[in-house]
Length: 379
Image (cartoon, rainbow, N blue to C red; front, side, top):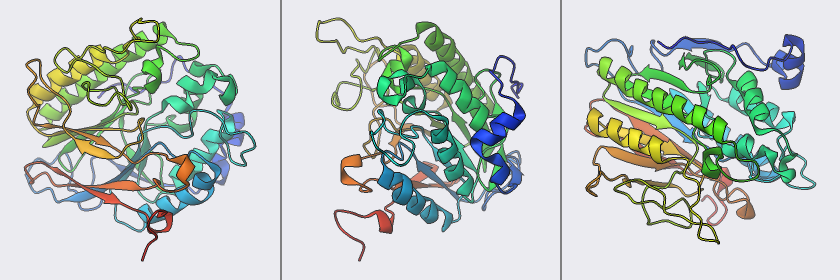
C-alpha cells in the first residue's frame, strides 16, 4: 500500500479550515473499509469467487448554474439516495468553465464553491468519491473565475476533500492514497473489482489556457502514470475481475470527434490538432494514453474508463492498438454533463451494476431523474 502523507501541502490552521468548509455542522459519518462488505459485495480480499452483484453511481460536470445547484443536483442526490449503492463517484468539475455574473450560488473558484460541493457529497448516503476537474482548479486563473492561482486552488481542494484516507458521504470508505502532494489519487478494491481515481485534466492537462504550467503538468503526469501502473499491478495481485478508472478529462482517442475532444492518431496516440496559425496544440495526454493502452492490453480483463469533460453521455470502445485494432476489453464511459442552457435537461446519473461473475463485469443503466426531465416530462 502506498504511504499516505501530507508533507508539502499548504496547511491552513485547523480552526480556520473548519470555519471555511463548515465541517463543524456536519454529522459524524459511519466509516467503512474497502475490505468489508458494502451493499451485497463480499470482502474484496476474500478471493473465494462468491462475490455478489452490487451497484455504484457515477456523475460529474455538475452543477453549472443556479438552477442546477439549487434544484437539479439536490434532485439527483435524492434519486441516488433512494437506491442501494455501494458508492458514488463524481468525475470532476464542480462548476462551469467560467463564473456567472450575478449568480446566487458559487460559480467562481471562491472557497464557497468547495463548501457547497462538500455539503453535496456529505448528503449522499453511500460513500462519495470524487476526482478534481479543470473547472475547479486549472481554469481558476481565468479572470471570469476570480484570477486565482491554479495550484493554490488544487492544494485547497486537497485540504477540503482529501485530507484523510477516507471518502466523503454519510458512510465512508477507506482508500489507498498516493503519496503527497497527489493525495487526490485514490484506489480501493470492492467485491472483486479494483477502482482508482487519477487527476487528469482538460485544458490540455494544464498545458494550455490562461496560465499553463509545464512543470506542474510534468510532475503530476509522472505521478498519474505511476499510479496507473501500480493500480493494474495491484489488480493482478488481488486477482480482480476488472478495473475501473475514474478521471475528468476527455483526452481524445482518435480523429472521429473533433467537436468534443482533441483528435489524435489512434495508432500512435499522438495529437494532431493545430491552432489558427498551424502550430501544434500542446499534447497533455499522449504518454499517459500509451501507458494506459499498454496496461489494458496486458491486463486482458475488462477495463472501464470513466470521464466527463465533454458533456456527452456515451458508452463505447474508442481505444485501438498500434495496428489500429479495437481493444476489446476497454470501454469508455462518459457521464452525463451540463447543458446549462437547457436548465436541468442533463442533470442525471449512471448506475453501474458490478458482477464479477459476468463476463463483461460492468453493465450500465442510465438514470434519468424524473424531477429533472425537461424535454419530455415524467408521466
